[in-house]
Length: 330
Image (cartoon, rainbow, N blue to C red; front, side, top):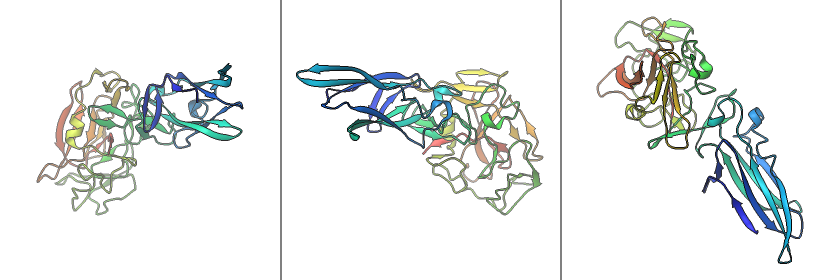
């Protein structure tokens, strides 16, 4: 090797990282034979959407020279800018191999994104993984549980699940989205898996009988936690740490919070809620309601946060309500 890889933004044991705006790095080798570059895209992080399996394809040899009687080859490792929907949130991973006579002599793990920490998006997203968003000491999912993209203006008002994600009754694994089927509570099945909203006016106004406080299980992942692997529903304290909005515009229903330097915004849509007594939808586009995993001591209710302005509020309510979920990294 003549000169190792240069011009990256971060290097850790995870590999070399550049941002979503792309970058050109260089690397050079001494060799009797012409080396070649060969990108190997990680199938978990890369697919054909938005150039996810071509973002290193412009890498090429840019110079050949004789230095101290040795042939020096210099390559540009070109990382294309991310494109398409949610470009600043996308995360891609690949390995680029330097080969001589089809034998790999050096490999680099490359990441394109705001960090090395990924959140697995549902099928249909702009890329298989988005960057988890760091705020304080926590990494948050970039979108609500069940969403396939970051929320956009009026998603909540229009009940657009793509951007708002799913609605859940507290402790349930299956979603109970707006306009879905309704039945009378309670049920004795803690995992009905039928996407039916269970309404009730009887105390303790829970969809489940007998009640079970451990289904979402506090600060560990409960048996009914709907978040993907590596993530869980946050506790009340963790949710409150998000804090007030940096930007709130009631006309678009998006609660936007600035994250740590280098990360895109944390955007929470005002997806409204479903009323416990009827299953009807309310506050669509004007209020955001997010369950925590926490249960107050001795209570039959559970903690959540909500906003109808730029202020983040903490509350306790009955478990038959249908609310949004934003996952946190375990």
